[in-house]
Image (cartoon, rainbow, N blue to C red):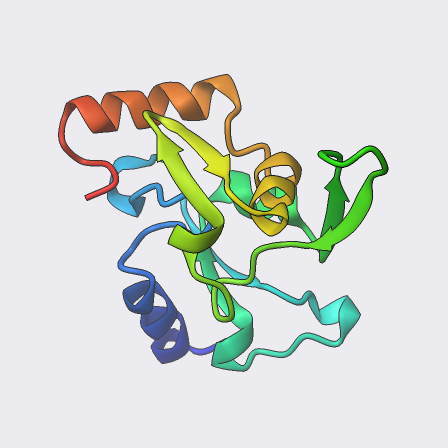
Length: 135
C-alpha cells in the first residue's frame, strides 16, 4: 500500500483507532492500516476496506468477520463492526472508560476485540481525566 493511501486512511480516522477510539498520539505502540475484510477472505486494498486500528484491536480482530452474540438464550453468529458501513455511535457507547455494545454488532465486536481489557480501560480512564478521550 502506498504512503498516500495510508495517510488518507489515518486522516479519515482522525488519527484514532476506528474500533476503540484511542488516539494514536497517546499510545506508544504504532497503529496499523487494517483490512476490514482480510485478504484471505477476498478483501482488497480499496479505501472502503481499510481502517485505522490500534495494535490491540487489529491483532484481536485478525481475519475475523463474525463473533457469537450470547445475549439470547441461544448464541447467534453476528458480523463484526465495519467502520465504513456502520456508525460507531449507533453500535457502541461509552460508560466512563468502558465501551459498551448497544447492538449485537457492538456486543460481539467489544467481545472479540477485548475492548475492555483492564489496561485499556485504565488507559482510557487516564485519557478521560486529562481531557484527551474521546474528544
